[in-house]
Image (cartoon, rainbow, N blue to C red):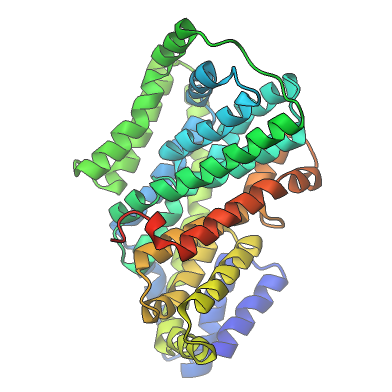
Amino acid sequence: MAAILFIVFLALLVIGVPVAFSICSAAAVTMFAGYGDAKMMIVVQRMFQSCDSFSLIAVPFFILAGDLLAKGKISKVLVEFCESFLGMIRGGLSVVSVLAGMFFAAISGSGAATTAAVGATLVPELKKRGYREDSAAALVAAAGTIGVVIPPSVPMVLYAVIAEESVNRLFKAGFMPGILMGAILIAIALWQAYKWHYPKGATFSVKNIAKTFLKAIPAILMPLIILGGIFSGYFTPSEAAAVAVVYAVLVSIFVYRDLTPKALFQIMLGSAKTSAVIMIIIACSGPFGWALANWKIPETICSAVLAISQNKYIIMMLISIIILIAGVFMETSSAIIILTPVFLPLVRALGVSTLHFGILFVVGIAIGMITPPVAINLFVATGITGLPIERISKSVVPYLIGLIIVFLAIVFVPLIVPGLL
């Protein structure tokens, strides 16, 4: 049955069937092969049951909040504030790009939204000041991967639902890995700045810092309200997502005044389409998960892998390689929904915390956002700059290597992930 399930799934993917329908069809074919039409109603039942989770309410709201910020003035004022105290160093605008990406990550929960918001504001300015456009686009795309690691994070919510892990614990554990990702990107960007003799920016000015800070206060308050509310217990992550949307709308309309009713409708329409894609994948994963559990496929895979080696580090290396490869060919949400039930019995058998595994899984899959062919951040960067994806892909290699180093550190040095002690 495992062979039927995976062969049908992969065959459908190869011929171009969308991931959601490939998942569901593979499960349906496997059920029919095993039971005839006696249990086909399970397909529909499991689809509805998969979506019946309060935590999943956070997904469409965080997507909408990210889109509101990406297409509004909030991202611009944040960038101006960061530049006011970092622009004077050589390559300072590159550092601003990463810091803006990290800050935006604490608001949006989306890699694509982070890349779009920061890229639309900074890439033209970087080019104007003499930075290499392909390298600038690659840096912004790489910084966008932090969008799903620093909380809030849509992939973390999906993992938490599947693994029955606490969303709050995952969010708390995501800060340090996200900071490390940002630190290594900044180090590489500064090295390139001296290598290519990038210019220094404006001179340091306390007056300019104060001016940009006052302008950015409403934007700075947003992550403080969202994350502060979650970690203090005032509201759940799902409620925080709704608060993020309301706050973003109010700030955009009444403070920065850059959001018209027509623009709001278009943003909501785009967010609804993105949310629908993710939710149909979640729904279709229900029958797939039932088939995995019914025929004990994850346990079989676990036994087979453990028969190869009992060494925890060798097996974790194999899992890490599979995650990185999955990120190359699969969209983030799809990979988490499909692979989490497969890997969980194995990592539990190894004594690996589901919290640790969740963080390394999200970081590993996030790296796939800048590894073609399914590299959503690179496609966003291409749309912003008009550069061919081949040029940006070549320039992203140093940042890709840096992020993989951080990923391997998270895999083999669990102390990096807060909350494991």
